[in-house]
Length: 352
Image (tube, rainbow, N blue to C red; front, side, top):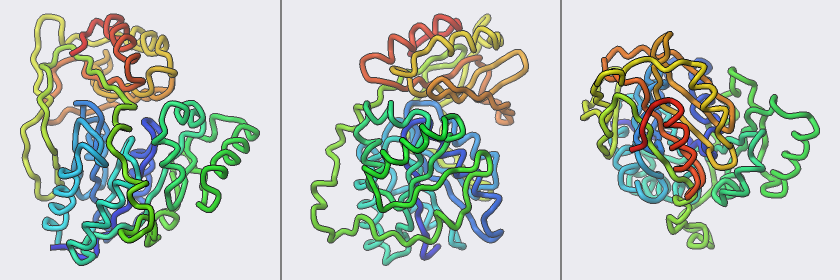
């Protein structure tokens, strides 16, 4: 059983770049660090963890279909306790949360500190900001504003896409939300110095802090984001509580991505058709599209956020992906389904 496991919570709005920053830290950490990534995904498609499993992480543990700070409270606690039980060394654990309210998440970890005699310990709350789109999504998400207000450090990502003037305005605005927290610009693919986010020994969200009840969430922030699944050549996914993959000692779980192939269902999507369909999306209502697409040049992971996209080649070693489209579309509640329907029609897929 591992002891004194530091937990660093990365939070930030959809598509801010949390997973990319975490993965960029790995080559810069001491060789004896065992890093476990615990994360939640909105929707049914486990994308970021598939990327992470190809890295040097000791293990990846994923929770689907919800937010760790409210609807998945028990699952997060169980996953952290599983990590504690499963490692002889002391891993650094990143609880990675897309739209989670930081206070509720942190208080849960503080309670685990007490229950485990500090074997599990909150080290830092780190908020990732998408410099190009923060002002826009902040208007639609009170949670995004709270994430920037209650954190140990703010990482400003994607700042190279805006002007120096726009960056100055953004920093001024962040200072109105939180003038005491350090604000650090990420350096592209190289990310940030690990010393800036590790070993901070956070003093935020102590259990005896005054006004704790006012910082707790009632779970209504989970309604800020609606998700829709688009499939072609895949069976509708089943919901699982928690998926865990370990490079050394795996915990097999039933897989939600079993696919079936009908005539034409596994035919590649023309890349030009896909990009045209994505370009028609409005970032005002659709904030994130991610999943698997089969192009003529092979299977790829698609990451689309606020009109910018990335296609990453994916080797399906386990043979789980015989279909051609498996995407989760995330956006404004009440609006995103119509946009997703049009996207599905343009690429010959269906909503489920």
